[in-house]
Image 1 (cartoon, rainbow, N blue to C red):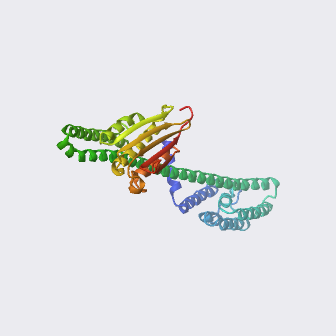
Image 2 (cartoon, rainbow, N blue to C red):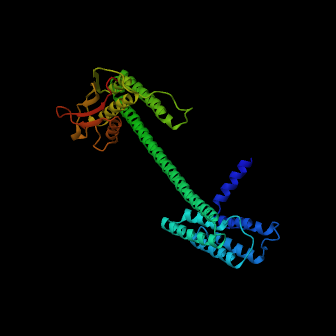
Image 3 (cartoon, rainbow, N blue to C red):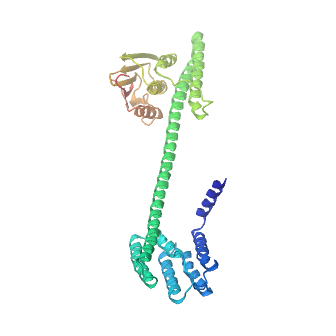
Length: 394
């Protein structure tokens, strides 16, 4: 409890206006220099007069300005001390408190050239003062030592304050950097969620629209196909809702967040089946040495194929589309090619500035890969090609 009280008192003092701290320090020194005037004295010693006490007080008063004008303060202390020494004969002081504090302040606050000039002048003043007093080497060495110690303490305090300021500045920079990094991470997460929601909703709504438009025709011509179309709409909606719950779970607390995994390559067959149910002929093939991939890369492959198929359904006017996963030694290629209108007719890209193709490029770049879109090999249709590097041995 005592320690806590002391810490609170110290914090309050440090937060106080420096001018009030200097006034408090001056009063403290005044108390110390008053002691020789009030304690019992040897009858043979010089008397403690009011004049001597007044000059002593005037010698302490410059400490009030020791922070704002330390050189002027030390000159005031020297003048008062000289008057006391030459014109009065009162009680002596154990230490020249005011002078030591002024020297400390100069060493702490003033630039190097000014510090050195004052130090050189003080050596002369100390030598003259000792010569007028005892003239002994003992007093001279002691006086030089205590003033040099005050000077050294001032320099050490300046170094400590500079180090503290540097540490605090570094901490502030780290805090700013951490805040910026957190904001950037949040922005990246928002962009990721936006891409995921775009892919999920765009794909689901496109399939549902195609099935819904085909439903009335099927009701008249082939009722069994109408039932299948409505079932496809329901299944697509259920799947979209499940994926949305998974995506939006990141916005909840950890306890509430669902644990469903991200879609992967294993879900491509079901994705192709849903698109095939819309009436589009879809082929799906994997070539090369098929092997397990990182979960993040599998999710990206799924979303790229989903977005490419969604664009085919919405924009291409195609009758067939080919989905190929080509496993190379060092890279994986995802190729989606349709036989639709191609880029000249709007194609499956939805225009060069479409959000879907932008999302595909962003997903590829996130894994150090590339994305290319353009006409098919024979100039017809539209191709989406995404390549991503693989670690050897994955």
